[in-house]
Length: 311
Length: 262
Image (cartoon, rainbow over all chains, first blue to last red):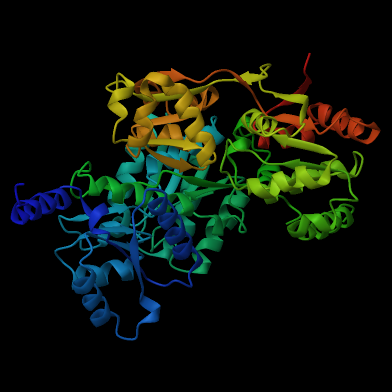
């Protein structure tokens, strides 16, 4: 009987495990900026559900559990040697990028990801829907709206507004945009803008939304001129926005897991950052009725929350 | 001010609705769970239905986000009306749960729908879906079942190599293809109609790779031949589309009316 050549067996095993990606090496490290934040925890939960369904395993590191997070994370990365680190929130990403610059990183829930220090091995799910997604949904709910106005600051949102304008053309919508340098200009610019438009769009611009007063001015002016307001977040529904569309949190978690597995299989180009695939829609029926604004009733099955006057 | 009392009453019931078994044995109720969507609109749905129902028999709607809880109601309650998908009904009937169709939902005159697997035109066959992401709305089990049916016996083996991305609703699924988050989408045919309206350019880029069999839209079912109370509940449901507020509620369910099965 021929003796077993253990050396050959060892090489075969090594080749087998090296070729099967990190599903075999077992390690996805989840770094959560703050587990007590509902949004982050929901994302983590959905992420883990998908990993479990696909027989992947993971290790978790919550920043709020560690007084010396830098050192502890560094040690954990060395100890576990994860093939990918999933970072939930900007803080988690910044830390992971710092302590493990050569690891593959996947981020989500990072506000304005374009400002992150993104490397070659970084992947992500954006926190905000793309303007094209928002525009498509907006057009679906209000097919008769043809002209939308918005305020922005050139310093922070010029590129975003250019994208919005391009996307709007595909939906047959005309965008009238006015740039401001200071929130004190809002009233005057709105007086000129509102008569020219069918709807006002609040974008996430730090100059336009620099304080509560500027938000109040926008809604007051829009109300005086009977113009509906669309917003990127449902926090503006209470102030009178007719519609708010944002990314669905649970989907971000599931989508991140899918992307992580695709990275494992080498099916995703390096540096891929996707827009969120799921949306959450809030419709303010009370504001719509007050404005006598018609909307596509068939779209009601796509609404997560309808706000009435009694709420 | 006139509406304050009923609303207060509805809210108190909604809060109690967290423990449905506490009240479900005394108040005639429609129980709702849909395997074909993940849209978490239960608060608005309950509010809309209950406000309407205050003046139409004083009945209630109890939506569920967990299939097990909904099925527990069916097993324990033995009465009232159950609103569920046709696929779910068949699953329960297979387990010998004696649910019978009383009404079927309609949408633009149709009582049935097909699910369609759509992708960009460079994806020309099922085999090209290997190691890709397919977006769909609905429960995991439902989506796998529909995809398996669409792929057919010959391509069934592909299932294990396709990653399903569960999204809240049909329009998210079809848009995910256009915006590059998924290679294909499973949606109702009406989902593609919606895309045509939202984003005609994206719609033109898609084509259909396969279809499921036709199935009923939402179903209203009973556990036995409807008694007098259940007949009244069904009648209220059937007439909902005759009033604006009632129709708006039905639209939230993705239908615009009800029809008795011939």
